[in-house]
Image (cartoon, rainbow over all chains, first blue to last red):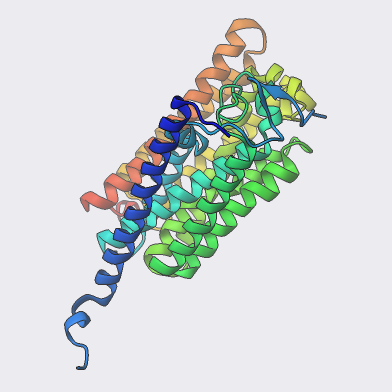
Length: 46
Length: 316
């Protein structure tokens, strides 16, 4: 299936949006993990 | 009732071909509905006792917002055939042929599963369960079962739109109590007069699409009476948060005035039954109903946040 230039442009924009959304999810999970662990992050046994 | 193989804007509903812009996919999430859902969810979260870390509060709101978006996308997937017939919804991405039905289904499903799991993992599983109930109720009970079968569709289906304050409360406290249930009841009783006012001046739309809204099935007069009855129940219900300490003096006055105006506009809808005046009355009630909910919950939010809650009972 041959995509037109317009379709390629739309697909590219969608891909960027999906990428940004996924990056946002990663950051959100990271931040919530840090918040939940709190000061216990440094209190782990070695 | 409806022809599910309609061809709109050159796009066959049954085939996967179109793939719209990012804006089309945002439109699938019904951003205006989402904003009201987010706001009521925020109020449930803020008025709950205790404090919540801002990051967790933001995570909660993102999950609620994405969950609401999922409901919108799944609704547009299932209702594409009737959306194409109704003037109000004909410009939605699926009937316009900008997004394929399968894309809407996939998009909605991914968002629904993602938001529920994220809520469970990031916040708590009670909030996740309530979010799942909200999405499931909207899709399976309202969209698939009730909407095309009974004029009570938006009465029962309204439960899904009323749940967000309970989700916010559950996210903040990990439990449920009477207070969030009162907020649920307010939105639940607000939904029928809100949608029936719209249906009064969009009756032709619903009739063409075969959606048995109350004005289509029971007629305008019966709908006007129902609107008045629900408004008379809603007005005192709006003041109820004062009784459980959620709202103080500012809220009591706001809810009283807004409730009075709601009943007044409902009375105008009831008494004005013919011509342009009748349509204007219905439009006014519909517009005001959105403002009512917004201002009512804003009063709750502002009063709680400013710490100026005055116990009304102490003044009596």
